[in-house]
Amino acid sequence: MAEPVIAALQATMRRITAGASVVANLERLSGGANMESWSFDMAGQGGASGYQGYILRRAPTPEMMAGRPLDHALEAAIIRTARAAGVCAPEIVGELTPADGLGTGYVMRRVEARVSPTAILAAPPPKLLDDLAHELAKLHALPLTSVPQGLPHTAPAALVAELHARFTKAGSDRPVMALALRWLQDHLPIPMPPVFLHGDYRLGNVMVDQHGLAAVLDWELAHLGDRHQDLAYGCINSWRFGQIDKPAFGLGDLATYWAAYERASGVAVDAQRFRFWMVYATLWWGLTCLHMAQIWRSGQDKSLERAVIGRRASETEVDLLLALEEDAPECERGTIEFSAPDLPPTKGEPDAAEMLAAVADWVATSIKPQATGRDRFMAAVAQNALGMLAREAANPVAVQGKTLSEALLAGTQSLATPGLLAKLKQGALAKLAVDQPKYPALAKALERWRAP
Image 1 (tube, rainbow, N blue to C red):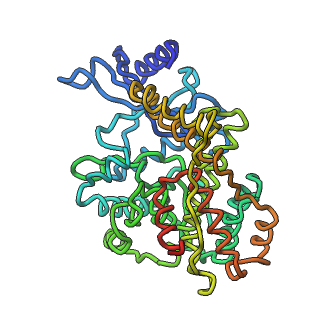
Image 2: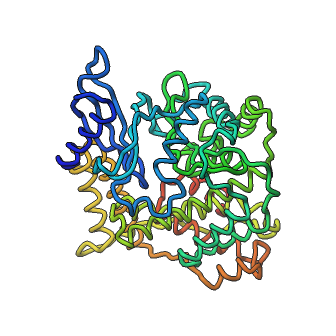
Image 3: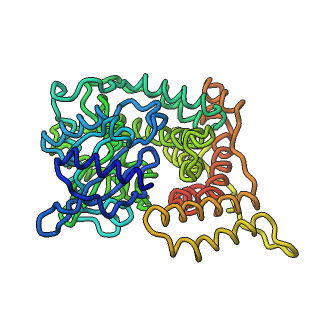
């Protein structure tokens, strides 16, 4: 962060804390493709340690807030309300003002706990799954009269219509997404009384210490709606972080998770509603990945992270086929022939795939080991991007198909169409093998689908 911005943050903290302390140890955190998060200390605070830790969450430009359902003032009010009700929400100490010159956002006291999903899943506290279920029940029990005004109230039909609009904006040419969208339209659950929803409740947005859940973060998608939407969201494959056989947050089985939620809430989990919202959340994330690419392409945010996330859409297409194939006729669920793409050996001058592999190796061996903080994270992102390009140069693959997508949306083709499911599986596997060959669902899909 540039020196003038450091000075602005220091002046802001003097206003918020009514003290003359000095900002120290400023570091941008690696997470957050939508918002910036900065960790820093205030010297002269914190008792014997001499420091108090804080987090600045901000959007430096108005463009970063475009299209967001909540502004930062409402987001901060929601966090304050949840914390006052006993939810593990961070303590907000102050909001930014235009005079601060830092954009929009707020400052929180830093919680000293783990946030990395891989670190959490490597040694999760024994009661973490119970904690997550109980905390969600506590959130859903917030009286709507106590929740700040202005939260979106979403019904399943409206949310699916919104996905349809996003699919159209993204080109409406991904057949697996079209198949899922039509399935959602055909399986809309009957609306139920709304509750307060976090909207982004998953590993990556919670902090964990040795005792269990320590904080719930990232409240920007909070809204009112069906509790099953929150229950299912953190269970999609993308948020299991490698623990694909543990569908409840990568921590355990659904029966244990549902039982813990039911004990805490007194409300039974509806398995069919849960499945609907699992498919919805998977498609939502796939379309969000494509939207990230649009943001990058527009120039609104040219960060490499946005572009690379755009290529994660193929993860969700395999996930969607894994989720929906049970609805196909049994005769269409047979195994398929598939060989994972590889970099073919070449002679003579290096080809495009080899050149990209050489640059990726340089990033991995010379750049990443010397980088720290967000720079180290971005070096890993760059390495991932170069790997994608090397694999694609050697094995070009495309899954776009506007005509087929339109037929699936219209219902003139479906999972019952002879040979269609096999064709979709072939394309989805090939695309994911290029984009994210280490994505755990790829191995799971190959185990289930590939002929011996």
